[in-house]
Length: 104
Image 1 (cartoon, rainbow, N blue to C red):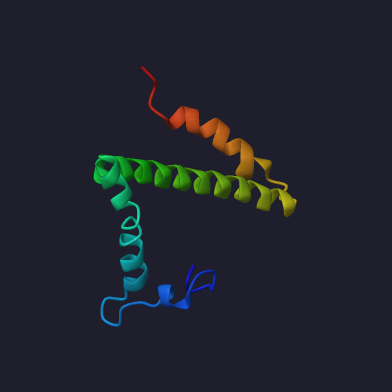
Image 2 (image 1 turned 120 degrees about the vertical axis):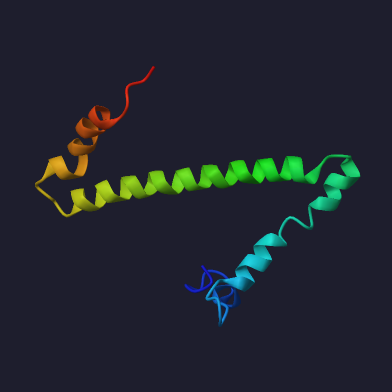
């Protein structure tokens, strides 16, 4: 998002040798630091509570993005008026149950 200008351009810079987004990585690893003292004052374990909740929220965000991408693909082909309904919608509904392992 730094490369596209949605956030600071500095977050989009990459390391000259490793080509990794080192500034964005450092800033995301420092983001839990302000909330850690609040957990310490409350007597809670920040790694247990904060790590679990952030992992769950991250997973939920990824699933939401994948679902929106799936809907966008169908919408794209429907807007193009693709006459092959089999390739955009029906193919997924018929092939997936046949290729998946049976439920126990």
